[in-house]
Image 1: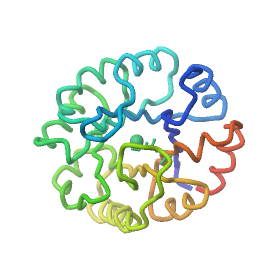
Image 2: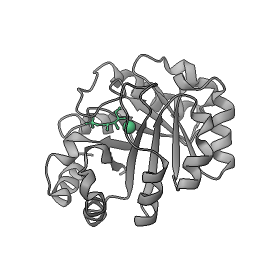
Image 3: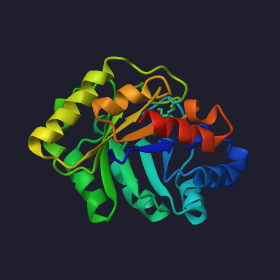
Length: 218
Ligand code: DX5
Ligand code: ZN
């Protein structure tokens, strides 16, 4: 069995009690948190920024998976690295010099990931695949939690899985958007390694039970 991971997106957590939420997630066996950073430009929504990431870093040792949905992400790599991110994900659509930006993330000793919006063709990132630690396949248009998984994305996930086998690439595949207990088993079969879950994870306050139930499905 592959070592598949659930990465709850704290965007759907209770922000007033974020510390307690993180503690509960750790106790439930969660080892990676997905942090959705939105700037109101690249996506039509605003969330939180470096000071919050820094506070979370001080509070927990779990892997911090930082999903930058921002314009000019290259200007923010140092800041998020210093704030304590472990994985820094940039969108292919937001980077003019994607190769440079991904390699810069790696130079800082962080894991580098590239993300694609649903409308972006996988060939757009073909020339960076040998450098990246992870490909984040967006299965909704980024900006909001609680959206429905776009069925066409199955094909894109399968493409990245087949390609890594063929070319012996080492990247992990992460899926983000509309993942729930009904589609997660199929996504695992398609080759997904890391499952970001927002609304479907946090809808039940018994996180230990949710983790247990989902682990059975993947
Ligand atoms: C969407 C974000 C997601 C979001 C997922 O733009 O990138 O990480 O929080 O939420 P759900 O799982 O509810 O689609
Ligand atoms: Zn995300």
